[in-house]
Length: 105
Image (cartoon, rainbow, N blue to C red):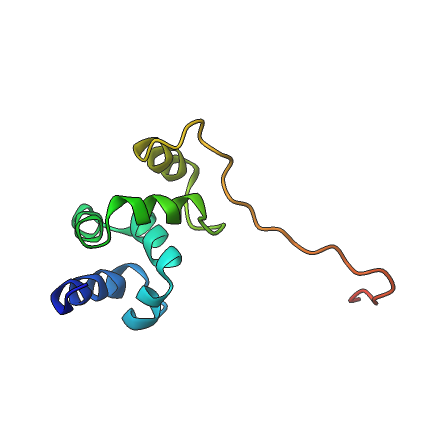
């Protein structure tokens, strides 16, 4: 990746993943790419697709974390990338309480 491409992605990251520094956001590729799909503008998505490529974006979508996509976005992007049938949306999973551990009051 060229320095200008990295700068372009950091510019996208600054707008789309506002809760992290651009360097931290782009370091977490899966999180960055899924946030671009769910919160990016058309320009953000086009820039990211040009720099990163559709295969890496598709891989990130297949391993998407929970809580990033709305149901409509999830359906759209899975169909866009040909992931059919569309899998269930990622869900948060909580660990079951360990046997013998005390519960919080």
